[in-house]
Length: 542
Image (tube, rainbow, N blue to C red; front, side, top):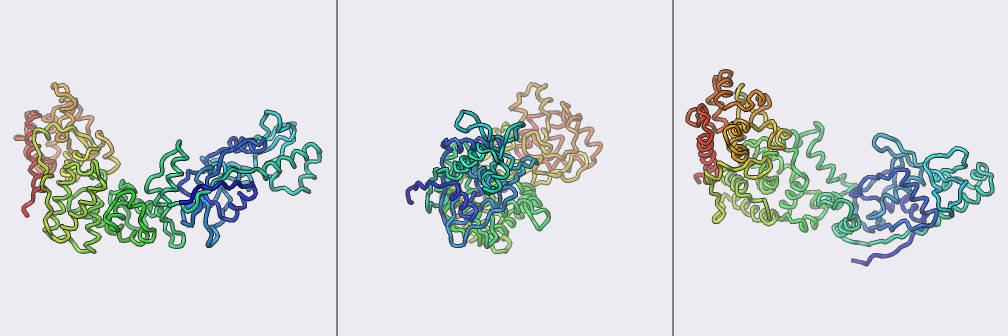
């Protein structure tokens, strides 16, 4: 890499480079947020000869997403064959000055801000310690718009301002603005990840750029109409223009997971440094293939594993090996043997806290597991077996965000739980599954009932006490009632109550201790049923 180079720029040279398309604001910068007062203070400082900071520009031939307009001012494209200078530091200052120079009108929070309405008070001298640049014309004072000062011809200005002192100040201020020597540092031909690291370090008060934001910048291709950010937004929700993740209930899948799917497909690695090295053309060319594989993986998870929404997934990362698998299946359906192996892998990874740490390395290993399953070979989990203990499961604290709890919820969802009262299949929704007290979660033995019976909160709020219900269940009516009281009422509404409860892995209201309000018997019976179901998946007959 070349060393940073000091390249002082005069006002006119700096803004000529913007007008010709050479200087650009990359899209990973935040939107222009300075108001007129901040802009006025900046211009006042320039007029008085104060330092206003350094602009840091990144010179590169890489094509990035950039802002194409400043308010109502459309910016030209980068000249063909030229390098671009992307602003890494000083965006707010350079945009402010340009907005004034061009007389831009910018909408902010629904309000239009006209940058022609920044004025210089010609009745006071800039040499004294008083602001000469203001945002409103003062009564009984002669003021000139900074925009008019910069853009107006000498003839026009002489006609409008015929006071010799005013004309002298106009001439002086114009020379100070247009002749100001801006401190500019250029870094040339840095790799994009290093340039973004520079951006992050000099913007220490801001938020570090995410891997996705860097890859959005790196893979942008105007000619191919490829914008990774737009592609991801379209993948989540395309407003009815074809299938999207919102349609299939998987709209909470983060952009990082999609990047990992791409990288797993291309190089069988998902480390940050490996993703940053991916060639732009390969990412663009693989997009359609990976998205098709992702949808196939999701369809499989929804139908074969019966996980209806992404919020139930123990880890979003699970989609990476499944997507990898289905891309290589090239449209073929898994065999019965492969189905068993895929099911086994899902539950092993989910219940073993597989992706709680060391995700990148573990995914690389799991892609090798998928390679075995593709060849219809049984993977070995020797030394990493999942052993479920009833005593531990009975008192396992319920957290809606914990992978192990989510795995148990996936098991509940597999059995397509039905409404206690109507016997219709429960509608499980992402927006209801955010926290432990969401609409879809119901403590079968109400926590307030258990509290009255001397059970602590950590004994009441356990995963085995959770049932997945619909929003029609009147939890207020249930309140602190004992299960035998509210279930007696519900059983009168639903004559098929015994079969309904089986969909919740509560096989028998008598033997599960429901009518006796025997909480620990209920936990033991349901716990055994849950463990039996999980063991069938973890250790299939193959």
